[in-house]
Image (cartoon, rainbow, N blue to C red; front, side):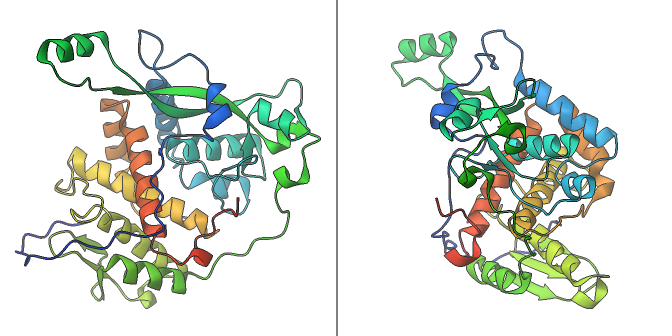
Length: 341
């Protein structure tokens, strides 16, 4: 991403993707699973899940492992987005990183997860002694101070978001599950990226210029510059680069309206690069294509952001899921790779 100070003529609002999904972006499978949640949360004086999650991500980065890339270099499996085995819904936001990390740590080959009760409902059970993996979702409450403020001012109360956790297990930790929960064992081939990329560029109406020797997104003119494919050792790296820059473009004021004003070296700049890196990784996983780190030299700045704000990684992962959903919403249904149920 790079700032551009040129003036831009007025433009009409950009299109909204018909297929975009704007569900809660720090979630699990919702419904009954959410009701299994632990009462340990992030308000009322109890331990903060934000701090626990952030500490895990910081430890990975300090060890030189990037959580949104590690799954395929660590496990040797094909890229995939973690999915709830009972509902078919993909996990999103910070849950993607936590489930990827757990799969790598324990050597799982499947990205399918479910709660204890869901395993029972599918005719199986979690094996005795198996260790659960934490997943979180957003709940809301009204602090007492806010209740008093709203009552005194005669206004509506404002809710505060916080995280609650529940526990899930990989299907490989279970016995007796219905075949539908286990998913297909077929070998998955990476999806050809050219038609997918063409659909994204056309749908998002971003001006992509293949020229120069440096990839960048110019926010004020809504344009991506990218070197020609011949400049990359492998053709797939060109597509990964364009995905990264398109991820920045989702932050344009007429799209998802993120803060793209940060200058190089600032915390705002680091936050936006973090969002773009994860967005591209989520999209690559949807295509069964291994992501890479475009800006490994930014790890130090990402660590600084995470250490300064324990909620930063959760917010960034949520923004990345929102951006990925926005982008895939422009794709024809047969390209989205979404579950049929």
